[in-house]
Image 1 (cartoon, rainbow, N blue to C red):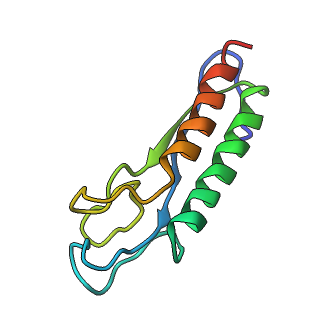
Image 2: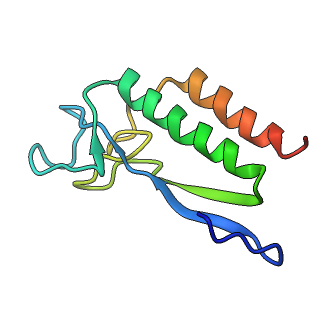
Length: 109
């Protein structure tokens, strides 16, 4: 993310990969993976906020956008904001909303 070019947007095409496997909401009960694995919603939310705070700092250096991986778990990948069956949101929605709003509002500063 240090390849800033003032003539075009600087975009992080994939970030996140925060894994949380929730029993009873998996595509398969074994062989699940995430780039990093956590034990509970608080740990997953803390990691998301940490990543988002890093993005917030990069905006001031010309950073334009980021794409989160991924909105839902996909088969054996447990990196989603929601479980494979879309029944559980794995992070604290209020904390995620707050940091996302902070990022969006920083664009107007």
